[in-house]
Length: 307
Image (cartoon, rainbow, N blue to C red; front, side, top):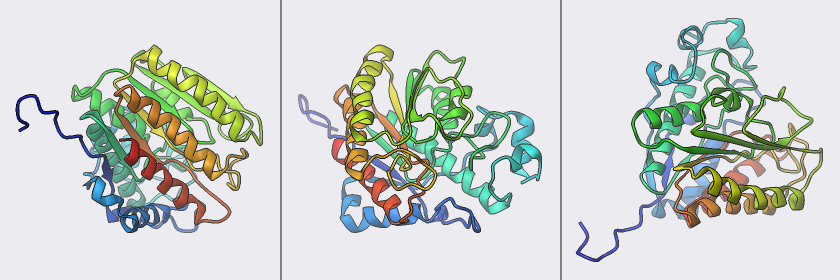
């Protein structure tokens, strides 16, 4: 308890992670080892002294049903080899199912921790291609949608701004919140790339090879106006690393310095207004695998500094 007239202590950013992120994706292109590598970078840098470490609980069937159709949830929970599961392009296996339950629970925790007044960082998550009724694009469960819906159900918040900066449009998230006026979805992405586009509340589709100046110019003009116009109680920031110039599945030309400036704009503009920020990492498939945890670590560092 603080003394009369004394300001309460600043809440430390929350970092949500557990060793179970080390799932085997077999020979899949998704670099799941980036989670451990990013966490190790945070530890060796000393940043753990400035955060609350939070171990997530697995999302429940009831949590998934806040977003996903009952038939699809049934298939997912029993690892069924059905068309709506195989469309993930991931292996269908119980350990991968459990990974998605865990990382979805981590987004629930990141939103909860952020909503308490600061920053919540899920070192995984951001699986924005999962639709209510089927998997897609390496995504079984839309943890962004589940995290937001669970927080709304628990009465933690109502109005949310999703800022999706992955190189691929957040098509599943756009569909999930299409009829929810309290959740504004904004996606800035490469236009001529996967996926088949859905309609977000605001989409900025960039031409191939767009670089730092163009990208950051859009963010500088757009993010403040969305924060002021929508007046969210929380920003869910999807901080994909695949807008990087050397990404194998992307076609934009952002540098690491540009991506760091992106993080500063999104997180900084929100925090200057007192808006909490939940963060998930989404994609990243750089030619040099070490570049991906470098980019994610920079996001963590910036979020912790601005938190």
